[in-house]
Image (tube, rainbow over all chains, first blue to last red; front, side, top):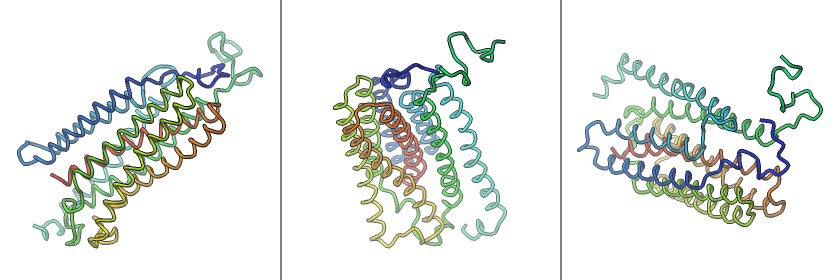
Length: 116
Length: 208
């Protein structure tokens, strides 16, 4: 962490910039989101379309994290990576538990039967 | 164990007078932790949207299929990704020490980001003209809150870019402008990641 960097452009966080990685992130993420559009528009012909869309989104996010944010285990990025890895379960738990709780609540109330 | 608390030789401890505090690394990590807490706002909004996206929460009003337009959403995706790529150009120019390159990249990233915001404003204006407002139902409240929060983040990113354009033009690539450009990179790239989730779980799910 302690760097003698009088020139800010020599800072390790500037030095890790990688133009090819940004282009790769753009190409892969665009291809995945184009595929997602095709899947969504032909959803009836594809088994489990929501699962396929979720997979494409997970891949696109992973590619962006690796190539745009450049999270890795180098001494420059380690704490960025650790804090991100620790935050992901909080995000998943917050969304997942809320949806699960209300899904099971809906199943036990009359609202669902009124709609069907 | 040494006086420096077991640190490797060559490095100085925090309490030693010649310790060099790495301002850039401290500020980018601090801002990154802020971005992660910002992501929890989106977790709350995605959770609310997930809970309220059942048809009966629409109270007989419009549901997602009527609200989203796949090609507009796709155009928005391309503009976000292209803007993020242009900001990558800002970073490459920064590494080379090119002030002109940084300024040109900021203009390109700003214009492409503004295209996204313009498309979204156009999309919402069309919904409002059809009488579809956030207060229409719990379903619509959750939809507008999620998509608009992302849009407002994008608008603030544009404001930040415009600010950085004038700061870099006036001050050059100093400690302060460099850490701010690095923080804006974290912010802008994070918006692209969140957009992938909005595009997939709101727009594409609505098209299905």
